[in-house]
Image 1 (tube, rainbow, N blue to C red):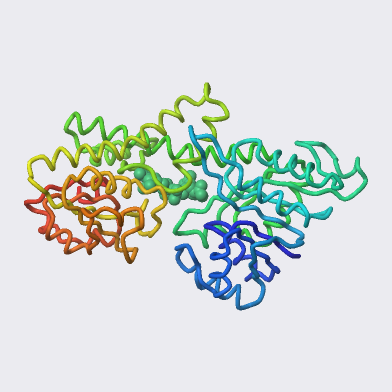
Image 2 (cartoon, rainbow, N blue to C red):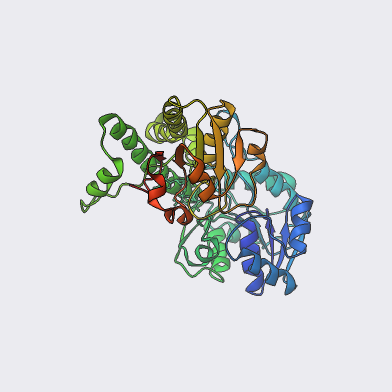
Length: 418
Ligand code: SAJ
C-alpha cells in the first residue's frame, strides 16, 4: 500500500521514514519548501537521536519521497501542529488545511488517521470538512453502526491514533509503545488497527475517536498536574526552609506515593499545551487541571525573582545559566522555561549572563539580540560566575567539580547538586 504523511515534523518525519524502511511506498508532505528540500538531500531539520540515519536510508531506498503537495494513497496520516491561540483556544487551522489539501486525492476504501494531539471532536470535524469538500464520498458519522453494510458501497475510514512518543526516544517509542486507536465508526477502528499492526510492537487498544482524543489529553494533563504538585511543594518548602528534594525522596518511600520532580517550569510542545484543550472544552469542570497549568507557568517567574534577590548584593553580578533545553540531554528549546528565564534576566539587565547549552552550537535567535548574554562553555561559565543558576539536569553538568561551586551562590532548580 501507499502512505501519504502530511506534516514532516517531530512525529511525521520519523513515522514516514520508519514506514519507508518497512517497505511501504511513502509520500511525505510539508508546506515548507525548505524542509522538503533538506529531506530530499537526506538532511534532517529537527534533532532526534539516530533520525538522520533513518531518514537518509529511507530517502536512498527510494521508498520515501517528499513534496509540498499530497498524492493519491491508501492511507493518509495527518501529523501537523495543534497549538493554541489567544486565551489558550485550540488552533485547528493546520488540521483543517491538511484535510482540505488531501481531500481531492481521497478515494473510497482509503484510511485517514489523525495523529496530532487534538481537542475532543476534532476527528468528527475532519469528517465534516471532508463531507463538504467531497460530497461524492461515503463518510460515516460518529459511532454509526454497520455503516458499510447499510450503504452497500465503499466508505472512507477515519480514525484518531494519538502519538505518544517522548522526544529523545522517538524511534524506539514509535515501535514499542502501546497505542490507542479511536475510530469514527467501528470499521474505521478495525481498518486503522490493521495498518498500525504492520509496524507497532506494543499492544493496540480500540475505542471511539472521542475517547481516544480525550485519552491523549488526559495522559499529558496527568503529568502536568503531577509536576505542578511537585512545583507547589518546592514553593512551600522554600518558605518553610525545608529541602524539597529530601522531602520528596522521603515521601516517595511510601509504597503508594510517587511524586515527580520540581523544576524551573514545564516546557516542550505538549504538556504545557494539551491540558488547555481540556480546560477549553469543559472549563467549569476542569478546575484542578487549570490550576496546575497556572502553577507550572508561574514557576519561571518565581525562579527569576529568586535570582534578582540574590543579585542585589552585587553591582553587576556574573550569572552562569546552565542549560537552555526544555529537559535533560536533548537540544530541544521549544517553549523552554530556561530560555524564558535567561531572556527575562537579560531584559531586566540583572547582570552579565553567561549562557551554556552543550547540545547546541550557538545562542538561539531569540537570545541573540541581548548584549548582556554571552554564549560560552560550562567550565568558563562556572569559573567566572558569581551566581550559578542550574536550569537543566544535563549529564554534562553532573561532571562539574563540586569544589568549583564553593564560595559561589548556587540556585539549583533541578536538585542536581542536592
Ligand atoms: N518535568 C519536570 N519534572 C518532572 C518531569 C518533567 O519539571 O518530574 C518537565 C521537563 O523538564 C519538561 C516538561 O516537564 O520541561 C515536559 O517534559 P516530559 O519529559 O514530561 O514530556 P515531553 O513534553 O517531552 O513529552 C510528553 C510525554 N507525555 C507523557 O509522558 C505523559 C510523551 O509521551 C508525549 O508523547 C509527548 O508529551 C507529546 O508529544 O504529547
